[in-house]
Length: 257
Image 1 (spheres, one colour):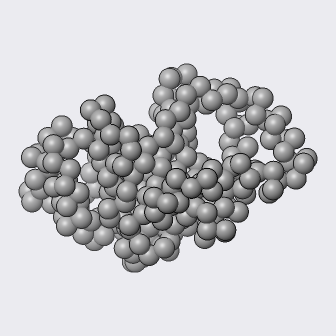
Image 2: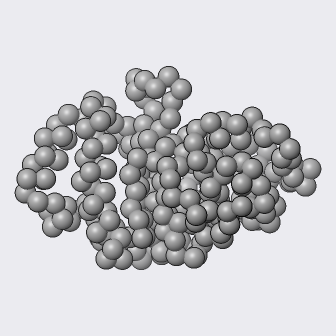
Image 3: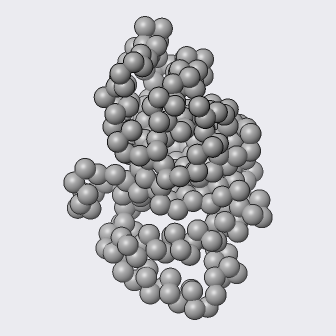
């Protein structure tokens, strides 16, 4: 049985193996139209190297590009179809100009590579985007696994955010730690929103990471022999409306430590 460690490591979410939980991350959702293969090539072949250089210098903790999973596999919706996730150890690093690591692309990529990127960028366009900031409250990650990860973010606006977070720490974290091998689950966590705040925005997010899409879907249905501690939960009081949205993503590119 693999050890489910009390930390977050570099994986599709772009989190870093620092042995800590008191850090921050941004979710930058984008809607890309046009040649999606060209977009993914720019990010995975070129910009990943620029982001990795920023990690190596300590400017950021981690970065990743993740692709939205739709059952019809057709990009004709107005939904965000990719998310970037970037992590930092504190607020100072979040607001630092160094967090905009892409501005250093000219120092990392050759002149020929920059020309190749420019040509590829002509094939797609950014139609809309939104960026949000979260503070990690608790997280788990299987450090023995370094393959592709499929995960879901679960967004919510609880009536009692403190109760929601505390229950996730004391009830659901031990449950996932104990049952992750049976679920083929490689990561879990909960975070609170820092910015933006308001009626139209979720206040908290949790995530569940798996080895493949089949495992994630089976988790949603339920796995035989695994009984969640729902009878001990106060979520009907803390979060009576449940999750507002649980989009699924697959990792495309990520930095490493």
